[in-house]
Image 1 (cartoon, helix red, strand yellow):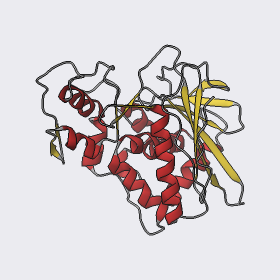
Image 2 (image 1 turned 90 degrees about the horizontal axis):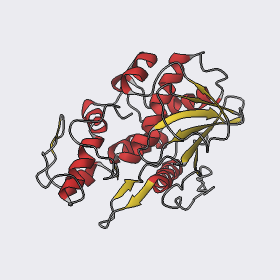
Image 3 (image 1 turned 180 degrees about the horizontal axis):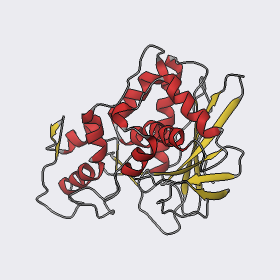
Image 4 (image 1 turned 180 degrees about the vertical axis):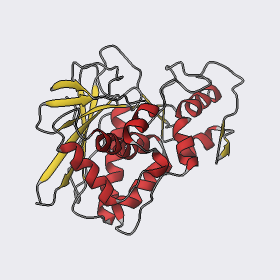
Length: 290
């Protein structure tokens, strides 16, 4: 098992080794600390660098992209911790696929149980707990239905992040508190997978973990449109650099942002691309990213 740890508020860590090997578990960690601070902002970005390294290979121009899928694929354990009102540290592990950065489930640390999305398809062999399906899927429509709200009405404040970590860390059943579980997962997926993919999402959460007074009551439409077009923008980039499936790619249009015309514009928004071996093309894949 390869290991990269971002252990807490004032600590530093080296990013994880590139790639997560077949059958292995790559581990990255973030402790939320006791309050927002500039040090926590640094710790959060260091954590994201570790997560990106755990799933990525590097193209010749320095661009990071997710590793290729395999039947024996490993998994990334993303540990998030916070202190409850009694000062006890509680932690939850999110399970992340390294070929696409999808969160497929979570495990309250120390519980011996993982709760996975009902539609999740991944190599379960590296997961060292029992596995129980949640009563909802991880695709966009299913998660929104279970949460009773979408990203446009999802609060992003330090207290919301803390509450989401604690809610999942204290969960004891797949079938209780399902709305709160779906809401917590939606927020923490944004904080981890989506922020690893997109520069602007990292900025949202850097601000939230750094300042009591900063937050937002939902993501604007243009940021959601970016998330929904991760596959399209990745495919466009690979076609431009000659690693895709056409020499005359369709120029993407992202509502709220406009036309994306070149590799520099793709890299302005995307920090990690989807692998060029995924075979994605227009339109988006059937699973909406979250």
